[in-house]
Amino acid sequence: MFVRILPPEVRSRIAAGEVIESPADVVKELLENSLDAKATRIEVEISKGGKRFISVKDNGTGIHPEDIDKVFLEGATSKIETEKDLLSVETYGFRGEALHSIASVSRLRIRSRYFQEMEGWSVYVEAGRLVSKEKVGMPVGTEVQVADLFFNLPARRKFLKREDTERNRVTEVVKEYALARPDVSFSLFSNGREVLSLPKSSFKDRFTYLTGLRPEEILWERGEIRVRAFIVRNVSRGRIYAFVNGRPVGSRSLKEFLRKVLGYKTLAAVFLDLPPFMADFNVHPKKREVKFLKERAVLGAIREALGLKPTLSPEDALAQEVRRYSPEPEIVGQLMDTFIVARIGDYLYFFDQHLLAERISYERTGEEERSCRSSVKAGRKLSRGEMEGLVREWIRLENPHVCPHGRPIYYRVHLKEIYEKVGRTF
Ligand SMILES: Nc1ncnc2c1ncn2[C@@H]1O[C@H](COP(=O)(O)OP(=O)(O)OP(=O)(O)O)[C@@H](O)[C@H]1O
Ligand SMILES: [Mg+2]
Image 1 (spheres, rainbow, N blue to C red):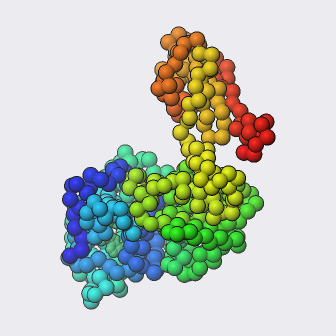
Image 2: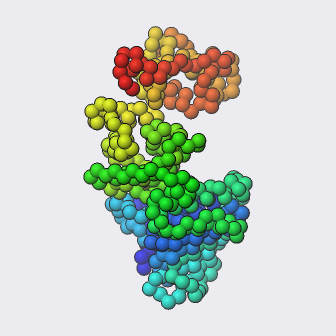
């Protein structure tokens, strides 16, 4: 009826990878589906942290009777049809992947009554295979029940954490969506006990309800970019919630940027809205990361919205921001054939090339003697590519600070110091 299987050329354009690794991932996907179905009330229930049972019940439009035995098939979606639609996605879902991923690793029941029908339908699916389909009496909306997650994948089940850890993750997910959508009422029950009960409210009241603190509110609009932020300063443990087009994002670089702009002792929810083609979520299998078109302008807009005056011309300031917050190392050059000089974040680093190479090889092989002998020696000219390679590996080291014999690998200077020594503000 509405659900179609995406053709292979569209599916190949969708970020591949694990969608479901924990009960919280299941809850996230089911909440998104309920919100896409325009629900105004969503009830979540879990038992044993979601490892035994998860149910998400909504009062949305429901699933058409002709679609109910298709929705859990691979690539089945009613939300997009062609590759071009990927540029204008306005729904949380677009991959036709979530129910399929859940169905294949659990015992799944979907009960749904489409809003134009007098009765509902229920399907029961085990490890991806349809077991039964029957009529049921129920109100308009959908309830998805997921039992025994990973029952057929013991290796994956083993990776689930303790009940309270999984429950906390689920609670966090519900809170994130609740922050993003105060126009929807949410409740969460765990082992029969109420954990959250959130009536519809304004953004500010929802924030206050969830955090216990009254925030200052900022609303900033410029053209098609809008920033709305709720901020409480000087809290003992800061925390940033970031949302792009209503989607909670885990994006480290965006959160780190916000933390630097807002300060580490700030509790804030920052909502950035921009045209869908400017924010690409199809870069991560769980849509937790986002890639911006015109990133400099976007980050600059956030900075301005949050009340920070650029010290340079706005364009230069934007350029500087991006350079500063980009995690990519910038190789400055080699010094005396002994040091690699590179800028990473706000620091200028002087790496001892021999000690650095030694540490890398030591972490690879675990052998001190050999790593010392086989490493890049001091006094050798390095190509830019070699330097980049070494510095990139350094970022991933387990112990990036000292060589296997305990000598420091680098010396670093904060850029602020350099700026201030010549009378400039950083
Ligand atoms: N709660 C719901 N209410 C109404 N329809 C639903 C609900 N949940 C799922 N559906 C229907 O089932 C389809 C498949 O859902 P599924 O989550 O697997 O894919 P999707 O949301 O289209 O994409 P994604 O994999 O990115 O989430 C949806 O496109 C929608 O038509
Ligand atoms: Mg979905």
